[in-house]
Length: 327
Image 1 (cartoon, one colour):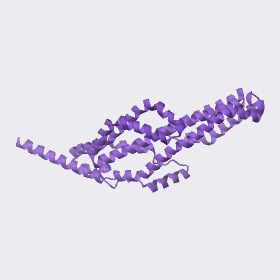
Image 2 (cartoon, one colour; image 1 turned 90 degrees about the vertical axis):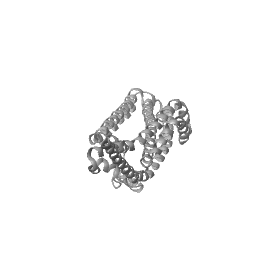
Image 3 (cartoon, one colour; image 1 turned 90 degrees about the horizontal axis):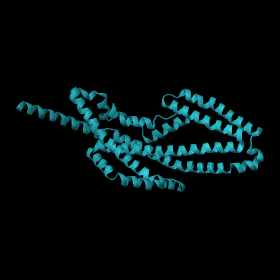
Image 4 (tube, one colour; image 1 turned 180 degrees about the vertical axis):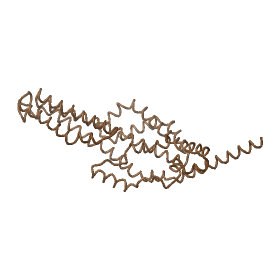
């Protein structure tokens, strides 16, 4: 009995020593510094995304006005020839098909060949959508006249702008989600119980937070879009409430999951576990330094000037966030 008690005390002391070591390493890790270095780019990206709604909305309004006034304008410009099939309409239809063929050969098909994985599928979807857009425009010009063809062209363009607007909203949501996730994760690394307190508050006040976000963010957008927030509120508020709960819970849990995995590693491999890749990733403060704000901006600007995609992508960031749990 005495031997068992001594072994239990020894094991408990060993686990407590490992726990203190891991927690001290968490506090000294570079992950808080990484959040600080990412902050300038996070703020700049959010402001750019929020500001992009205004020119997008203005462009959509201009396209809608052009679509409604196109028959009148083309009637004044071309006379009755704008409203029925004729040689001029056939010529314009052939020109649209020519633009499609040239654009496909010079730009779209090379991009499809160069892309890999999901990007290749996206390029194919864009290519097929462009074919549908321009062939429909050309057919309506040939069959019904220039006026209807131009209206079809502008109608497709208006839907592209609407889809772009909703894609922009998803990007804003993902951006806020990522920033909040990182913040709670860093707080949980340094003060574990504060992370759980934030999680409890997020679950308790989630509906209040959702209403506040829904009402507050509405004023970032042009006045003619405010009604959309009121229409979507019955659906959006519950979604935002869960959107607040789940990432907060995951972010607060990740440091504990990482610690349990490392304690299991110490139990299995002993002191040699300190040389493992997983332990080094979490507890070596010199690893994986994220570039500073100025360096991020220089990197992205240089990649844009070269016509390349930067390496600091949303997917890369999410892989970085979740690989600590799954790997």
